[in-house]
Length: 364
Image 1: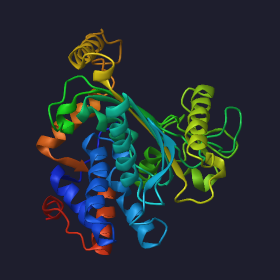
Image 2: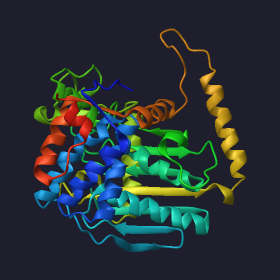
Image 3: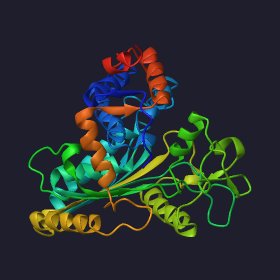
Image 4: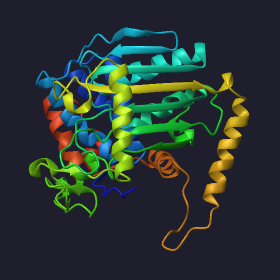
């Protein structure tokens, strides 16, 4: 994970409060605003800058322009027993995520497994946040989302499927009440099915730097260092070549079709056409939670003790880097790059949200 080039360091609660005020300022109900704020700031808390506060301006702008519904009527529209289909009614993806995974957790309590497909939604940030929510209830979590067609099928040169990221989270400690992100310490993985997330390329674009070789493809399907692939009708390079593009197709087909929605290259509009898949597994209905979490800690420890090969200082288990960031940033504040501060200035101006004190002090 790339190191954040900090222009300011801001306490986690202050950023959640700012984002909440921003959403309320554009008409999002306070409870939904808080949920959305917690989701977006959690990405920065874990060091996933690509899906954090740098995107808040885009969400706010879409509400102001009438492209996202600030007061949606999210509701069940299908399914039975342990499976449900929910419409997000073109609401914020971060709100739809809480509704969808919250429903999956409820179903898992009753049936052992809960599966929810959400349609008519929008970008919900980092899949890892939603996969980790069930950890608070001693459950295993899974989350997946579709995206705009930005990856070509292997051998092609036109984007037909999104870089659709799945995420899984396995608990490594039994939760007793609320489980703060800094204490979850789970085994989890959250990956785009392109070599890097599209927002990673956006960061290089904002920095005015070329993208590393192998991240992006031009309009002819050839490698390019231009991070602005939309300007050159390019695509994201799929992770693992045909494996990544094939997995993106399969996961999107399952999610879109079971949700009763369109596949990635048939989305009817840029907003309100994203689909999500949430699943929760109640560990206690399968095995002893203490046993499972102990096994999880054992796996992590054995991975960490694996001798590093040349060029590596240590071996990380899935989630180690993000968990370390969450502990560090909870205690010492979240680092933000200058381009994120610029976006938050715009948000404050257009919503009336008060900028965190630490942001103001960084400019003195």
